[in-house]
Image 1: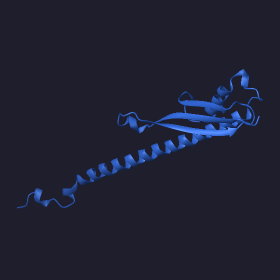
Image 2: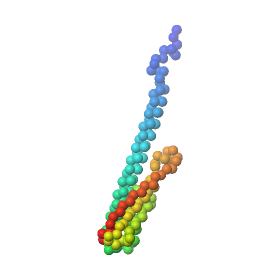
Image 3: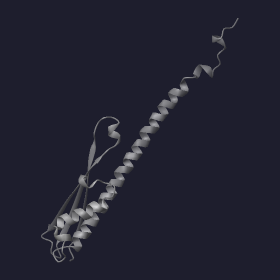
Length: 145
């Protein structure tokens, strides 16, 4: 006489292997998807900072010593305002802007705008290790006005 145990077919004996395979495959998929997401955010942040630095340098180039600043502010503060306005999606308090005129802000001089931002990885919260990467972009132009 055959028992219930002996009548199990090959499909029934592999019942748990599907869950194990799914768990391994899904974990790999999740790691790859999060990696793609984080890398895309990093590239996007770099592009936004490059654009903001360029716009800040363009403003400084056109608003040298012969052009008044906005509302009696300093040229550096005005450039910071322009950079913050063009750094869309990045918190303005996290962006560090420095402006250097060589030798001064007269026409023919050089202006360099440096923009720094500490990029924080979102996925690092999943592994409880805060990690960040300092992004730095520069733009240099000649003062024309």
